[in-house]
Length: 394
Image 1: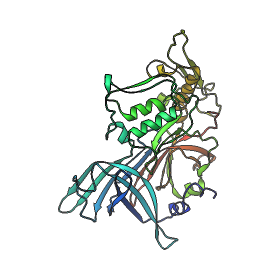
Image 2: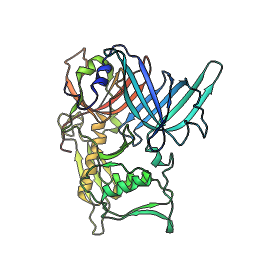
Image 3: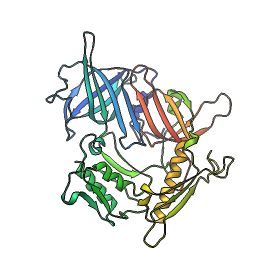
Image 4: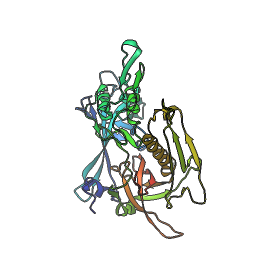
């Protein structure tokens, strides 16, 4: 396969093994990402990882461990405390290479709600991990300090969106954010005023949401990104049947008809000259199950007021209408598969899969991964939620 330029071929190889021996490494990091300790122990089968492309707090985990070391009390002077990160790696022994352990980085997390339970038969440490976006949301710091006049910050109209995003991340201590170009507009269309008591995250959302189809997240290395949500167009196929045939357990397709809207109208803020930015988007792809000119007909929604009052141009209105159609059509055309865990899999990847079909023709289709839930253990499984890929000009 020609996929190894995108990820480690050793990780790919051990994912196809029939038998797995699992290992977990947990590094304790300070806030400068320096390793200060390593937690060893037995990870219990109810430990989980989750990656959700539709959440700004993208990565979470819940780890239950029986420590083999005694220095991991939950105290202000210990390594399991509020001033630390953890980095978690899951390893599989490579049976084709002298049982060498191949590790996959599952992310850098803030430690949240740790607990230690001791009894005559058990000594268990439980750690909930949340990715570093939580440092900006108010969940763990992130509140803006007040200044004169009760207004913390103002971002003037005409400011460069990328520069403003970088400056805002820097307020939270992150100066390594990777920011892409913005369209349809790269400048702030109107003054943004952030009041006392707001969060850095709220300020970032105001900026990111000026343009639709953009995402904000921390990757598995704790690096913040702001970029356009991949549509699948011109993207490589990251996984195909060469892997799925070895790991697929089951699949199901679910559609929430209540959420489906195949015609979206957006009205922005009425301007001083009396005009109102307006746009319409409809599902005009005959391949879509929600085709606006198909048997189901047109299912319309009209959006105005509130957050839509931040729309000042027809171009921004069209961008938002297209995005709302994406949420209400494309994201509703979903497939959920259950597999043996593939620890290196990531969201927003384009994949190709041929689903088994005992009652008809098997068809190979492309999907974009949106959510991954993984249970660790001997009988661990992975649930992968994907949206159908349709080539688009968006």
